[in-house]
Amino acid sequence: MKTHLSRFSGKRKPFRSHYQLGVTLIELLVGLSIGLLVIAVAMGALMVSRGVSGTVSDASNIQQQSAYLMRVIGLQLRQAGSLYLNPDPSGASTGFSAMVPVAFETVAPAISGGNDFDPITHTLGAPSGGLSTGYRRYKESVYTAVTDQTIGRNCLGGPTDVATNTDQRVESIFQLSGSELQCQGNGGVAQPIAQNVANFQVRYLVQNNTNPTNLTVQYVAGAAVTDWLTVQAVEVCFVLYGAEAINMPTGGSSTYRDCDGTAIDMTTLAGARNQRMHVTYRNVFQVRSQGLTKAQLLPL
Image (cartoon, rainbow, N blue to C red; front, side, top):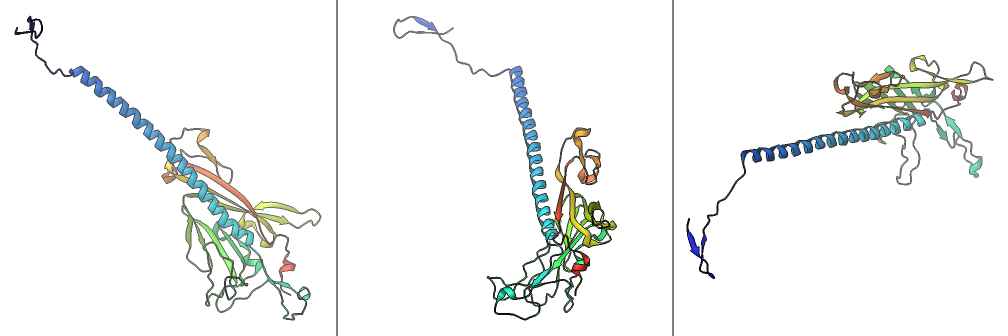
């Protein structure tokens, strides 16, 4: 062993070489195992977080779509059967505005190939299990325009105020096509207004006038309605489903109630609906022409 003299005492001290020491194979394997375990835990937490985020996003999208559908359908149903109030049907204007006669115009004949309006036949309908609504289209003064404008619009935002548009009726037709709820109106092409629709059903609250002293209202399907003027309100029900697959447990916790009250297990559904969130929405809309009898609507 080499020795060297101490600077202060003159004594020789042993000389030691400095070696760079590494980790053993066991230590390396332990470190890799801990690292892989941390990554596995992080990935699991990330997948759980993504699943929760997807479910929340799915629920939010379903809520927004249902609110939009109810708003569009409700707007048309609340207007269904509405008439035009002619402020001066006889054309005999007087100096005192309160003395001018007014009257509701019921039937509006077609003009130059446009559609007509008859509240007896055009207020409500049930084409192929869907729903159709109609109300009188007329023009009125609008302070932002020089000429009279039509305020009423169907479910697609038409018809527009152009010189060639002579429709007397604003109509909207809602029908389920596959998984899309489509809308059509005033001769336009049907367009989807909602996707991922599992069911769309309409029931009508019909007033029974058989006994005038004991009027009753009952739910009937569209095919059973014999007189649309007796319909007091319309119940709309639809089922929307999400786009994210959810790991659902089997049993009662994975079922939902369809529009007809049937319990359906979401884990047994096929195709794009399997393991998807399903939500049923239902609302009742009163028809504007409630209480009008056929005799009151017939033209004089």
